[in-house]
Amino acid sequence: MSYFAGITELPPDPLFGLKARYVADSRTDKVDLGIGAYRDNNGKPWILPAVKLAEAKLVSSPDYNHEYLSISGFEPFLKQASKVILGENSAALAENRVVSQQSLSGTGALHVAGVLLKEFYTGEKTVYLSKPTWANHNQIFTSIGFKVASYPYWDNDTKSLDLKGFLSTIRTAPAGSIFLLHACAHNPTGLDPSQDEWKQVLKELEAKKHLVLFDSAYQGFASGDLDKDAYAIRYAIDQKVISTPIIICQSFAKNVGMYGERVGAIHVIPSTQKDEQLGRALKSQLNRIIRSEISNPPAYGAKIVSTILNDRALRQQWEADLVTMSSRIHKMRLKLKELLTNLHTPGTWDHIVNQTGMFSFTGLSPDMVARLEKVHGIYLVSSGRASVAGLNDGNVEKVANAIDEVVR
Ligand code: PMP
Image 1 (cartoon, rainbow, N blue to C red):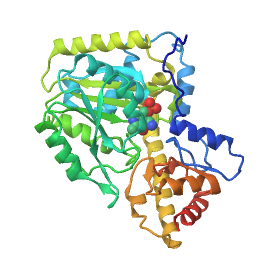
Image 2 (cartoon, rainbow, N blue to C red):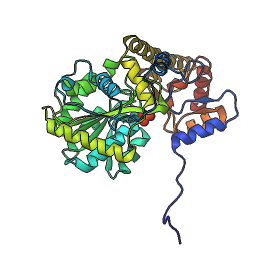
Image 3 (tube, rainbow, N blue to C red):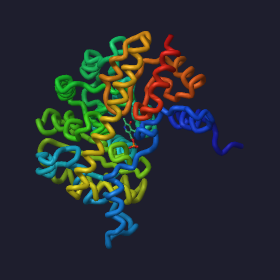
């Protein structure tokens, strides 16, 4: 008799499976454009100077220890994290309308948001995801028991935003549905709505009283500026454009480069009016969810981020580090486009420079991507999404020549 009836083996996770093939490849000039993790111009992981300084400061502090955090997380971190995303002068923060909880990075925040909504949300329990979206979004919500639907986002013909389709789905979705929005640096397309487009999107979301769930995994990566990259979130909240609850899932994996330390937070803004009782109830339920799942969040990464955010010089260093990362990526976009243009590679390549953040949705077909891997040792996901952070002065020409070869 089987004690695990119906169990089947799943294929490897597409992204981590790709990584394993890359690692096993013995070609010395192989190129990893898969996982969205920043690499320096030598193709190496980069510990941000701000993080190095914060680590030194933290471990030399007499208060440094490895005690448990509280269930809510590290309060000095949470307080500053909410200001990073909502702004120093956020009225919602000043009015004490924000309920914050530390999470296991962005994924953990999305999961906690899902569990909270599954249990208590009285609206339509369907989560609308952009088409395409980060592959994990789907399974994060379906594994909690949500229905998942999609809204048009990427127009493959024009390689631009399908605003018409996006707005039309917002209008036709059952009122009170849940809409997950990428706050900036959309993964996988690298395509963000303009400020004017955001205004239209948020207006329509409000008209149908949909619940807005912002996923902010790349703040600072799109423009190099934390404030600019929080535009949509702050517009929705500061202007009180959205009257339904807003949930923000905030990751510090990419913008502090602490991928494996799992630093993140969930911020719930339940109402445009202050409701202390509701705030306290939400806080207690978030605590219960965290306590039952992970007891309390991990301390180290949160303490590093808190050290950076609570020290003026370290904060300035971090902001400079964000510019270093985002501008190097932008430089690589320009270089790749220039090389493809010079090679007269069939097709248009302007989208590579128009896109923003870590990724470029290249428009390469799955067959072309497979050939890049097999013949050239260049690894990207079959959708044609390339992590531009994997490009550097030493490999960009090889990549351009290989793209030229597979496209022809
Ligand atoms: N949302 C998006 C859109 C992402 O791309 C990622 C990471 N790839 C995450 C959330 C979560 O990342 P993490 O759990 O590492 O913070």
